Length: 355
Image (tube, rainbow, N blue to C red; front, side, top):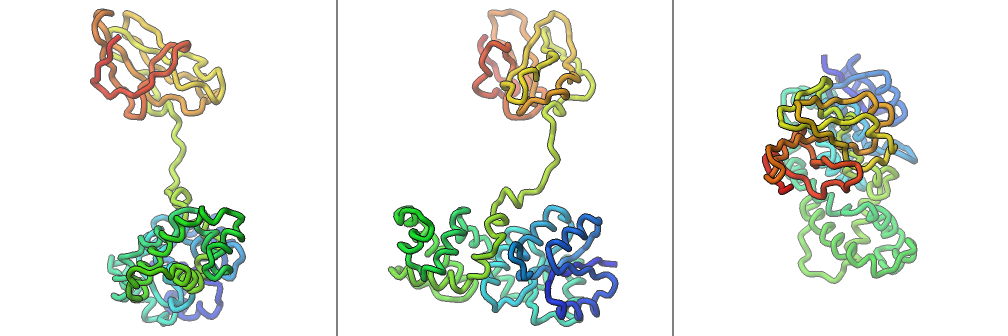
């Protein structure tokens, strides 16, 4: 049994899916309903995600983002009418940003084709039409069209300004000189996208940047003015969520004996200065082998960015160089008395430093 999700707000679209998948089908006509299904723990092997969800706040981009975070094992199909405004950009975004497994035009959604898509994808075969597979090789071009988060506002204003950058600057309340970089880079990006996705020949050197930008903004207005585009386009938003890692977890839960001629203890109340405790630890020299403990006091007032690395300093003679060995493979080696500044640069395992 293969669970299938359809994210589409048009009731008439369901008939063919119901005929193809029967009880294996779940329908989410809105992001709210998708969120509810996710909260209930529903799982799917395959999801067909439309772009237009008739919402003032969300499009299929948000649905792809939610599935990307909450159901990363679910394979997705970009599902839309690709002759409509902005749908080629949606196809590029789904492929490049969310690794969509395939693309299907809504006009081809007969039950037989739907079953073919399901079976092909589950067997590792891409059922996307070959011309679209060639186009989607150029999907990373979308990043050139949205090279900065501020560009979303510029694209929106461009449509209202018919490509007039002076009017765009006025609408955005910025100096027109600040838009020169956008004008040059966005024009070239639009030309490249048109060439690869719409088979429009490259115009060569052109001074008609206003016309090119105005036409592109109008052609792709539904995508470029999508209410969730600014959020979804951010790589940070799309980054896979990872559980927070407490700094001291780099150490063993149990005491570890450090076999050096002198040792370091992480002393209690190291976090007594609160969440902005400087990046340093207290050291205690001994002539005995001593354990390094992850003390309970650390969890009472956890410090921000506490060191996740402790070093053992072994020495025979104070006049000789000492070796610093790392116990945890992370960023910086910090071993300083609390009155001293933190060590400015990290040292790798086995490196020597003059005392």
